[in-house]
Image (cartoon, rainbow, N blue to C red):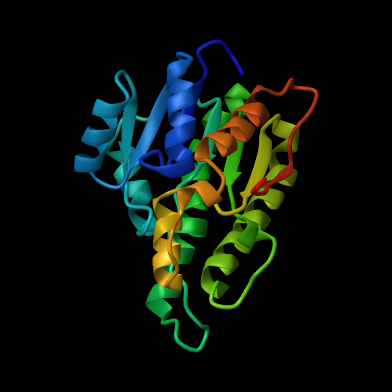
Length: 232
């Protein structure tokens, strides 16, 4: 990465995204944090002094272009880190189109749209796109159908983007964490009707370490796909 690299991060409010933002902020890089609304943007700006914010609702990707057109965007983007995600478990026989649309919009269509917006800057910087995927992007279990479909789609998006942008010098990395201690994991346990003990799962900081490793890797190499599993 360049000195004082510039990073755009979605999902920086919690979990893995927050851990990545903290690490990049601490080392003095410029970070642009995506928020769903102005109130959330204000909270993020207070949490990360000096950080810039971008506002747009990932659940409504059709309007992201309009939202971005009314804001200042970074001139340079060395990395775009997709860490936002939503999950709603349910049997295929019970999931409504609303549940499908919500997960596909936030987990797949919005990352595609945000990437489209920042590709010119990424190409100019010979930058990197990091998709924080999930173990569900590689395998699907009962009740995880809609979420896994969105994450399988995210893998396809990353793989296609890698082929398309290789000649432009843009690196594309997918990271597939196992269950990680985060608010999302607490929600999953609630949906599963299980007790939640964060100490049983991967610390978001450990996943953040793998994200930074992929960013800091010398330019002669690229991390394509990296699975991160619980070590306990």
